[in-house]
Structures are given as structure tokens and as C-alpha cells.
Length: 250
Length: 250
DNA sequence: CGGTCGTTTGATTACGATCAAACGAAGTGG
DNA sequence: CCACTTCGTTTGATCGTAATCAAACGACCG
Image 1 (tube, protein in one colour):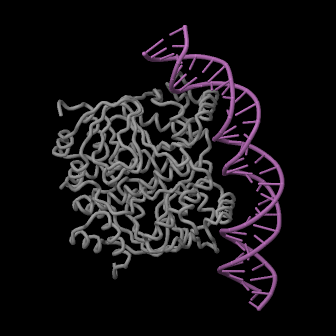
Image 2: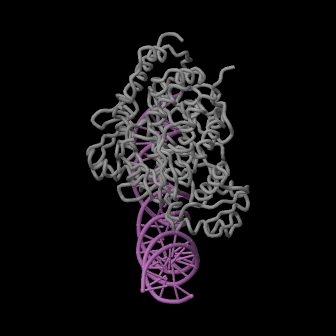
Image 3: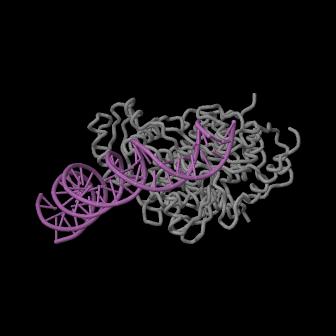
């Protein structure tokens, strides 16, 4: 470990937004033993069925999780931006039940699962913060079940674009509902359970309706109110607002 | 609290299957302060938007989580059987982002979130066991995203029936792939993102193919191998096999 | 300047939704 | 005990959204 990547501090700040950390815990996170690695777009960090030996912190770039069905279809399960843990999910459960792949060129820090578990279980405040982090992931999964299960194509795509807008903004990668989509329409399609052809048509329609403007892969949500309505989007599930969790007794 | 409901012990055994607990932790779980309550089918234990003050252990019966879309559609997000916690998900995140409703008449134990959090954070082995519990929930959510996102109607229904078979068996409520479905076809439909009419047709077809036999709401999976194939079902995501989590260092 | 990958558009198909109605089982009250 | 109601299941007919098949177009790269 040579020189600490600045994203570590971003990660700590992100965790602290939910649950304050004592100085010692912050320090423990910043001195986490790890191996930094640079990965090309498309590289896998975990494959379905792998033993989960290390947990992966995304230092830069984007990644996504997915599963492949028996028919060969791909369903993308979540997207991740820098400063997020890719694998707290798998690392407590011996074997990975899904794959994680880089969406763009990216840097990651591999942290031995055992070390992170040790920290999470012996430092209550840190345990709480990390637990909340995985619960928010789970909350997003739930919303995605709803998205692919009960919304029509227009709403699905609009919903995803709204989610990106808020998550990228929180990560400092978007402002004024304007951002660069780091993925192809095919990947978008695999996230919302449609075909890329149909996603393309929906994007076109959203443009014609004046809800979004596109230029290459940059997206601008022109009318947030109508877009929220189109996507049946309610940001509560992101739990971006800080959190006391109803937990600290008076 | 008068007399301990036997399901508490079942819950402890369930948690221990994943991560062994010291006697003190087991004791702490069994002496958890709580309010027992009997609920009618259809009663809500949490509503979307409620503050999450207590965590709910299901003592008997069945329950499910769901969200309602702006269009009025309902998506069921998970089902739960006795001895499962209904609300570890919400209880660390101040506000519930989905509703939980009883599928059948049921008994529940309401446990103050703060108490459970306290235990989970100060007792490492217990924290680990509960954390794994929520991670398995999350794993099921991921599989459901795949199910509704990328499988056709026959596979979706078959998959859900396979999942029930294993989960009910683990809970002692099924054997030989035979069990009583505790829900209507409409609820089934809302879980797989189809209409009840179509679910009915799929069930009929699965029967004609000799994959299942039905009598009222009892289901028998006649040919587990073909049913698994039909549902593209791989039980790994249930993480029923015990677990060391790759975590305990040698 | 090809060559590859992703986007865009068109034509046709098909799966599951919707609308509608009959049927069956369980529960209620006269 | 039998009408009567209610809720869930089953079946049929038609409709519509998104999939599929196919091809052209555009951007970026070696």
C-alpha cells in the first residue's frame, strides 16, 4: 500500500453521512490494508460462484452487478460509482451469487473480507455505518424489483435516469440533472428488463416529449417534475438524507 | 412478556445455522423484550413511510412486503414465514420504504429497534448472524430482479414455486416438494409481475406438462428436475447451506 | 480508410394484458 | 338446510406493448 487513494476519504465521508464515526473508526478505515488495482472496462472483479475472499472498494470509474439466466439473458442488478463497496454483499456469504464487472476503466482497492468483517463486528459505530450501507443497497434492489415488475417501458427508463441523476449528483458527477451516462443502451436495457432497441425508442420519445435532452451519452433532464412523474420516481428508497436510524436511544 | 413463544428458539436455531452463537448471545435473543400480538390476515405491520420503531419477528403464519406504484399496481417484494424477521431491513433506516402485510392470520413479536440494534452492534457473533440474515434477504431480492426482469411467464412462476418449496421445507412446512400455498393467484401474480389471469394459465400448463399437481392450494412438484429447469432455478441464492462466510481467519 | 461497435429506424410477430363472463368453494343469515 | 353473497379460480376473445428480425447509419480507432 503506497500512498492513500483520495477516494478512501470520500468513502468515509459517505459512510458518516448516515452514522457518525469516532476518530478511531475513521482512522481504521483509512489504514485498511488493501491492494490497489487498475482494471479495464469489462474486467470482472467477481464471478458468480467465486469464493468471496476480498471486498472491493471502487476508487474510480463505474461497475455493475449482474446475473445470467439459463436462456442466456443478462439482468443487471445494480450500478456502482466510485467510493462504493462492490462486495459487502458477497463478502459475508461464502460464495458469490452474482458477478461484478467494470463498466468503465476503473481503479479498485481489494480489501481482505476477514479484515473488514473484523472491523465491522468489533467497532459498533463502523458496523452500523457499513450495515446501513448494505441495507441501502437492498432498498435499491427492492425498488428495482418494482421497476421491472410493474412499470411500463417508459416509466422504467425514466425511473432509472432519475436514479442516476440523484446518485451521480451525490457522488459529485452530475449537477442540474445533467450527467454523462457511462453505459451503452444495451446495458441500460439489461438493467430495466427491455431490449436495447426498445430502450432506444423510449429515449427518443422522452426527448420528443421534452423530458430529457441527449447529446451522445450525456443526459440532461429538462423537466425534473414531469420526469419524476413519468418514472413514478420517489427518492426515499435511496435514503440519501442522513439518518439516525431511529436507533440512538435518548 | 408472558412465557416465551416457541418460535423464538426456532429463530435462534435458524441464525445459528449460518454463524454459531455463544451461549450469552443465544440467551440475549431469548430474553429480548417484546410485545406479542395476534394479527388477522391482511393486517399491516408497517406501512410505506412509517417511522421504524420496532422490528418484527414473525412467530406464526405468513407475511409479505410490497410497494404500490403510481399507477396503482402492486409489486410483492418478498414473502416471509414464521421465525423470520420482517423488518431488520427497515429498522436501521429511519423510515420504512415499503409496506409489510400479513398474508394469513399471524402472531408477531414487536421488538424495539433500538434494543435489537444495541445487541447486533455490541455482540459480534450475533451481529454477524443478523447481518447475514439481511444479506440473504438482499440476495433473494437480486434473484427476484432477475426473475421479473428476464424470465418469461412460465419460468417466473416455476421459479417462485421452486423457491417456496425449498424455503417452506427449511421451515418444516413442506416435504417431498409438497406444500400448501398460503396465497391467492393474484398475490402470486403480484410477486412475479404478471396478471392473475395469466398466472392461472401458466399453472394450468405446468400441470398439463406433468411438472406440478394441484389440489385447491396445495402444490406438489411432481418432477423436481424438470421444474428446476423450467424455472431456471439454482438454489445457491438462498444460501441455505450453512456458512462460514470466508470470514474466520485461521 | 476500412472496420468495429453502438445507435437508430422500419416491419412483423408474439407474449402477456385486458375485458368479459361463468364457475366453484366457503361463509352468512333467514 | 338452503338461498344468497363474496371471493377466488377458470376459460374465452381481443388488444397492445415490447420482442424480434433486419438493415442503415454514425462515431471512434487503429
